[in-house]
Amino acid sequence: MSNMTTPGNVFPPTLGADWFDEMLAAGEDGRQAINHHVMSVYAHPLKVYYLGTTFRSVGEADDILSGFFASRLARPAFFEDWRRSGKRLRRWLMNALLFYLREQIKQNRLRSARHAPLELMAEPGDDAPDEADAAWAASVVRSACVATAAACEAVGQKAHWDLFFLHRMRGRSYVSLAQEFDITPKRASVMVRTVERKFREQVRRSIMIDGVPEDQVDGEIRHLLEVTR
Image (cartoon, rainbow, N blue to C red; front, side, top):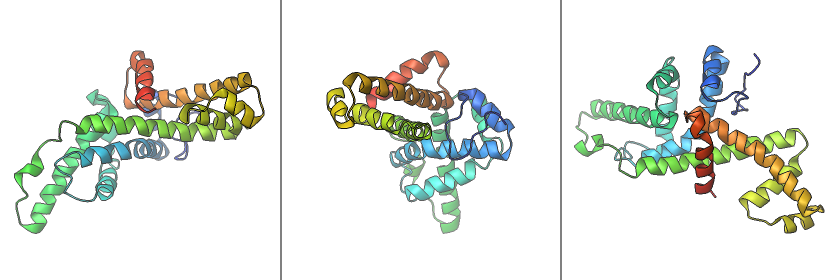
């Protein structure tokens, strides 16, 4: 299949809704690609979200997230339902996690024959979604870094990636990098820009997969990169 991805390649060549449509139509392999992307990009933001809610005493965060993914990602219509909802994917996953936590509380009540405190049924604190959004932005950047580094190495551009990382992520000047890599500052700038295009495309793909309308993507990229510097 032309645009199929493997679990090791979480950024597909097609974008957003088109990618989800193709993966959902591709059977088990496509579903695994979706699940891998969701767990890679959204596990940490959902953990931050969980720890910001009054449900956080239900269980250890890693155990809760493992159980949540096992429960929800196995549902055949889970992502079709999301697509029909019109929500951003991270908001859909946050809501799904709340429902999952309520289910866990009910099961715990039945097992213990005791009533859980009423406070456990409260909604998340006011800061939880914002904190989760910040964690999502950082997760997108990390995933984009991993994918871009792998893409550069695959085509013999490891030095390009190293220059990009040191300049963009570590704040090194072109002059100091040129001395270290024995190239001119102009050449260092060209190599960094080459990787910059690849990196921004990886970020764009994750943003579009999350459900950002195409006319808002560039603004979202700028905001995301600003808050994660």
